Length: 241
Image (cartoon, rainbow, N blue to C red; front, top):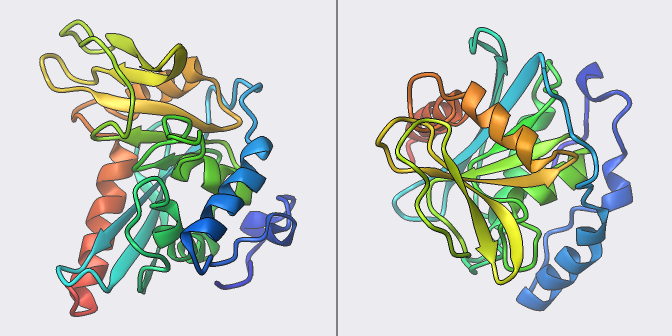
């Protein structure tokens, strides 16, 4: 993983304080999650009017042995892309449910280090607290970078819910037992919902509002859509599509 080299990251925590090693086993990965989970901050409301918002996504080659991680930074008002970076490499961990972040985190951090504009919010294509151990990709990235983060999943990882009403903005709680771990949010009228959860330094109300602000035309946030295109193009350009 590369060292930070731009002023974009000035003032954020040194990653050595929350070491991001590549675990050699499932047991080691679980231990990392247990160690970092208490560092997740769910108290603060988070930025209610961020100037810049980043989308993070990863695309895999058909063989499964190559990936491209992309980050796009959008102007939160116009939703225009103002910065982007990509990292092409190999999955850093095996495919294990609940430990998916370890496959992608090194490449995503390399891509983040390539930015010259520091985003005020990270929007992950995945989950945060809506995770069996309450430490999904959005939590992991938030803790490691020190940035506010939320997860927006296309499908749920866990939980039960009742379908929200059919109009844009309608939502229903996503529950795991007696605990609310996220929201099932309708971003377009009559279109299947997305699954929103807090990652770090955000409230669920604010996460919901940010997702709606990022979905003026489509089901998925513009952050996810632009990052998805970038990582797919990068993978194809590397001959691994």
